[in-house]
Amino acid sequence: MTTVERRCTKERQIDMRIILYLGKGGVGKTTISSATAVRAAREGKRVLILSTDIAHSLADALGRDLSDTPIEIEKNLFAAEVNILAEIRKNWSEFHDYFSTILMQGGASEIVADELAIMPGMEEMISLRHIWLAEKSGKYDVIIVDAAPTGETMRLLALPESYQWYTEKVATWHMKTISFAYPLIQKLMPKKNIFRLMPEIGSHMRELHRVLQDPKVTSFRIVLNPEQMVIKEALRAQTYLNLFGYTLDAAVVNKVFPENTSDPYLHALVAQQKKYREMILSCFYPTPVFTATHRETEVIGTNALAELATEIFKTSSPTQVFYTAQRTQEVQKENGKYLMKLYLPNVEIDRLQMNVKGDELLIEVNNFRKNIVLPNVLVGKKTDYAKYENGSLNVFFS
Ligand SMILES: Nc1ncnc2c1ncn2[C@@H]1O[C@H](COP(=O)(O)OP(=O)(O)OP(=O)(O)O)[C@@H](O)[C@H]1O
Ligand SMILES: [Mg+2]
View 1 (cartoon, rainbow, N blue to C red):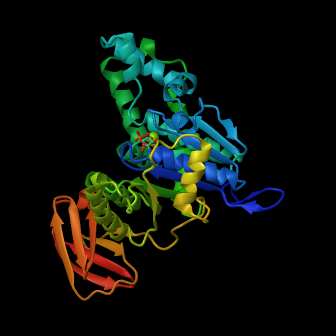
View 2 (view 1 turned 135 degrees about the vertical axis):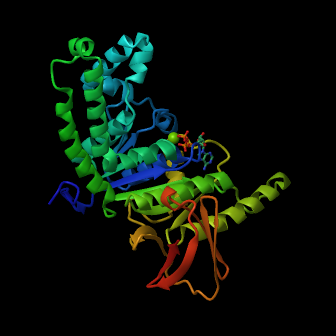
View 3 (view 1 turned 120 degrees about the horizontal axis):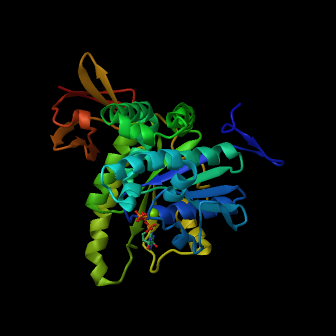
């Protein structure tokens, strides 16, 4: 039995959970993650909320100063912000010094070299390592990750998969650098083998990857607002989560204006939001969708956050697994042709229309419309035909 499967406390057994909220900038990821964390802690679970966003705002939401060491905000609720630069200085100094020295030899000033020596992928690696360490520590029942906006988080989530490629690339680059500037660089080479760490990190990555791909342990949730561009990015996130084998457990539509407003200024906005909310329900079907209203003031402090969590999750626990059925999208290659499987249970199909527009696939089944952002491998391809089988609509591309 691994540490993630079950943790025993005196009174009960709790399944370890990791919940990661993602979405476009400013939609409310930090707010919804914090609300989830406060509510879970008040249910008696030991919770760590961890911000992996470089532009931290978790401290603002919780109304407390934070650092990279978890502090207890209230009973059972711990919070920390990963400090990438401090982390690099502390644990990755060999890497960092080596690369920044090379950059300075190339003419960069010390400050610029320091900044540039943060290799691509390093920030993501450090964030993932923190999640892994928190999970391994056995101290928490729930880890909630307040992530950076979607693009960066997708890079983070793709990293365990691409780590091997990444290490090979770094190693090749290292060898090339040595060979063309040999005498100069050799003097700067660290005494220790900096690449000795890589296999160890590789095994941590593989372990974490398994945990992130286990839907009983890890839930990915998308936060979005009822606005066109935000929805598009959320759909892209849905596609890539599925592609990387991660389970989308729920979506939370945040900043919804109350429908019964007497303010004439808001009427048009409310009608527009209503249209987009319907679109969100069908685009995310069968994944559950929760709603949070736009509050009159910013949601700051644990009591306001707990109230928001009650509005969103009602009497359900926010740490439960909300979606347990099969993956909502899958891309397969059969006899050289691509096939996209869309899980749409209980949909009567009399009339089906499909249309590819740019990077989007638009599907209309009776009165049900679904937009899907296509993964890059399918962009530019035409739909051939579709078949509905065992609750899935299989779309073949030519
Ligand atoms: N339901 C809500 N009602 C009112 N204000 C809200 C609500 N949700 C979030 N906010 C406010 O909107 C702003 C952005 O929210 P938040 O920081 O949670 O978004 P984010 O997605 O984490 O942003 P970033 O991408 O910058 O990290 C904050 O000022 C927050 O207090
Ligand atoms: Mg945030």
